[in-house]
Image: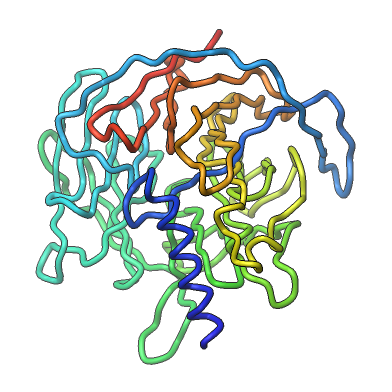
Length: 364
């Protein structure tokens, strides 16, 4: 118990260091972006390993959009022109903002334990148009809503598979939930010694499959040096690591996950973490988006203690073969991105300018 408590304290200290430049109280997804060479090799059942090298970045100046609401990128995603933003520090905690129309469509949701309130809300990322998922690990429930003209209409309630059966039946502490189809979601959870990315059947409260990560903590080690983000596209999933210079591409089906490409290195920073030299650990990828054609990965490339001192880059990777198409050099520090692939636009969040979104055009 003392070891677990000490590790949680160190993880909070590391997250606080990141939060000086990003969203308060939320684990910022800051991971390092590198580039790819044409050098590849195969290992295992059809897995392609590709090494990385630098490519000359394309300098990209941003336009900006001033937002008419307080914007912390605690949880946010883009769906068919609408930006869904969760900010649990304000009431209402959910804002739906139309980017084409430049207007707030809906603000909804109160935090609490009364009727129609959520104590600690989280926002699921939905594929279906005009669908909203609000979930709570402490309540073990996922509530689905339909977005209407000026409000949300309740549709149904589901529950997570049970993980701990003691005084209370609890699921894993899912920090991220992304819709795959009508009943399947991909959930990510972080425990002191384990990271799990799972395909969940919420209708039947079952775990269908779990990612079998090639990289695992050493015996007795902690999971913090292996923290990652999983993003979904059409039957594809990409995993980008915060402290490892590595991206993994997976095929995704209703049966589960299949690793197809590994881009980058397998070198970890467990030794620095064990020595409590967290500020010396390099942040690699800070965010990643899986589109229909490409992966969009946000790169910092600095030690944790230097976050915010360097402009971020966005690497654009072909989703089929893992080759880098180009690298965009932004003109500022970004912590998160969303992508409108259809219209060729990347929207970035700068935590030092919380009332703005920065707009980058994807090169043709």
